[in-house]
Amino acid sequence: MGLLWAVMEGTGPLLLEEPELSLHPEVVRFLPQMFARVQRSTGRQIILSTHSPELLRDDGIDLDEVLLVLPGHEGATVKPCGDFREIRDLLVAGSSLADAVMPRTRPQQAEQLSLLRALGMRVRTVIAAAVEGIVDEAVARRLIAHVGAVPGVVYGKNGKEHIKQRVAGYNRAAHHEPWFVLVDLDHDAPCPPPMCRKWLPEKASLMCFCVAVRAVEAWLLADAEKIAAYLRVPCDHVLVDPEAIDNPKQVMVNLARKSRLGQIREDMVPRPGSARLVGPAYASRLIEFASVHWRPDVACIRSDNLRRAIRCLRTLAKAKPCASGGG
Image 1 (cartoon, rainbow, N blue to C red):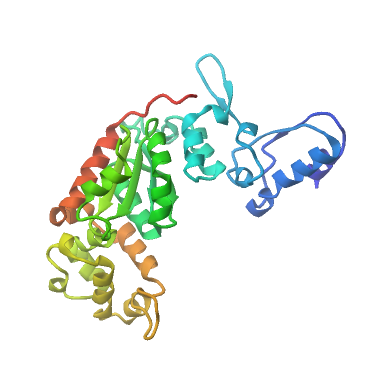
Image 2 (tube, rainbow, N blue to C red):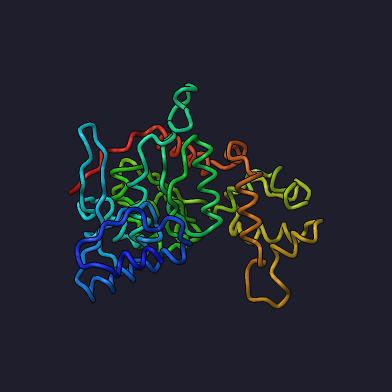
């Protein structure tokens, strides 16, 4: 109520410091609309500071209405978000304003707050990612952590075509900060290189673009011992060469169908007569496996495709982001 009174009373400029504090995120989402109505009816200028991504998710906020305060050795500088080419590239690629801007507000070397420096541990690289779906997100996060980096914002999760339409924007952003884009090969090409060349003719220096043969399920199946134990099937039922599997998703479902555990079958196998290719909790099960049980270092022994992806990510984890700025 105090916020409402502050906005409605008076006609001069109003300065608000983090108005989202103590408010539910669903309420915060409506604040930009309320401020816009007040401005239209009173002409009053409203300036606010925030760390809230919910405030920036309003489609009515223009890029040049958002300013970034950048700390420096000789004081802070203020720049419109439109001055940052990487932010513009992410917006062109279909990201929301919040997803494009908020990573830029992350304090540099924030890990020092946990005294990692004092313990002699290095500050880890943050890697943004773009993937086809939520299972791919779990795999990407696991791989980024496996190479000693920190998973950043994960974009996409809306299918392969969504990624394809936006990959050029992700690649432009990778001129400034590390990026990991992961898609399935499926049957779009005989092998990854032609697809890589078609999607990204000129890959940015901080881009790790990986194509899973023929789907990320093959990478999970490559850890035969753990996937067999998780699905409660004999280990010798898991195929020896995961990269030779024509349809890894179907192989995963067929293994689950043989599970000794009824809950696995119920979760991962489609119901009789269903048009679905997988069971109702197929994704949830694989997310759990990838996040908790999967061993990328073991899986890459049986999957050269995965080994190459890990090698690319290790190089990226050691890279130093370029200085950001306009352009």
